[in-house]
Length: 522
Image (tube, rainbow, N blue to C red; front, side, top):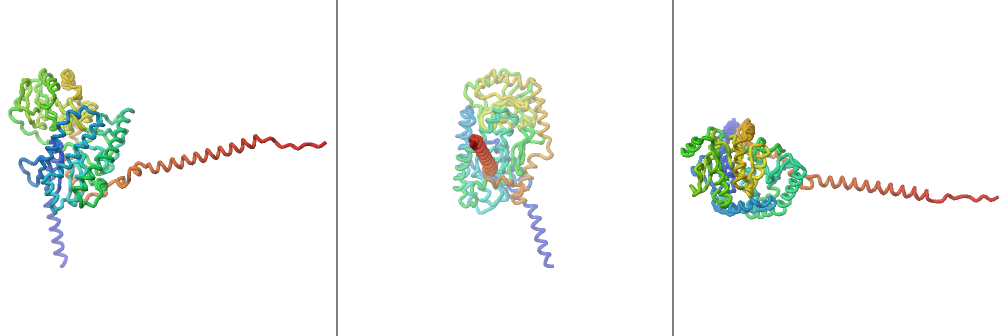
């Protein structure tokens, strides 16, 4: 009968494990509300599934939710503000010069989060988590939170697959048909585009390994002095990468088994929430329809140069449509009568309204996802990061038109708006894409929660880890094998050439010798 107490203890442990759920640490380091929206959607999904989530971010909840604990990092907003001020200036630079700027921003944000008093207090606690989820945006030193708290590392990319995420789990990115997320190419590239794509991938690899990652290694050693893993070993021990992407929104490409697409977690898939009365009346009173206009959370429309702002105002004034413009001042002197301005709009719910016919956007991934989900064609003015590629993809897919910021003027802007609103092909194409995006067996959030729980249950799910993570650059690309092959092949050719040359010379010499003759004595 001694087995009875043990059986009861086993049953009790099983019951408690199912009831209490897991504890997660989620690190959302950027002071970008669009990035935060993705991480917060996952945090809420895990909390609603019965897990406890500790969320490090500069955007604490206004109304605390059950199972969701905030670790506030207000100093990150200050650091991000410095970099935001340079967005318009950097938008004019070629991508090869923008890349170091992005890396510098990532490094500054990484250290700013470490320095936050609330984070230092958390690091000093003697506790563990069942899983650590880090947003990945050039913040590799943050991955050390996982070993520090004795948990598997899960990363969340708010931009989809990038050079700095694919490397974590060994996902291949052939330059022949997988465009870099900072370039304006599709998956069908010509010779010149493939050359640029390959060249930029080589440039990124060199910059990352010689400049950026060594800087993060310094931070990793500084803030996690007791971690036993080597910095590079730690990066490649990543258990799972969640991608804010979906194949219907991008291009088919290979993924490792532990790289999962969960794009659209932030999109409201239920009935739209009722709009505020003044916004609802403005929309419903529009005879010809409404255009929604927002440049996102990182760039304020009021900060645009006077010449650019004048071109926009002049264009909007001449439209027959009403316009909702996210503008950071309640009003301004030359505001057109057909324009409604506000510092904030419920974007998802506005795009869901049937009278909204188009979206003027900065081309951010979250905005383009929402436009596709709700079937609205877009005019994009990209400024930063992946916005250029998102809008290039919108044009290639047939649901959007790009207006380059450097070339922005009233005639060009008006032409793009007229085309997007008068040509039915744009709306028809985005409706097709919306249907493809919605046609999934489970919601992206349900898929994300499942995979996070799966990796936790399987203690890091090591069986998903690709063997390529144990290979160095030379081994992964078979450079040693190719070197050996061509060395043997070359030596064989040389040996064959020397042998033939030796034989030829011997034969030639033998033929050139005079024949010996015997003199006849009479």
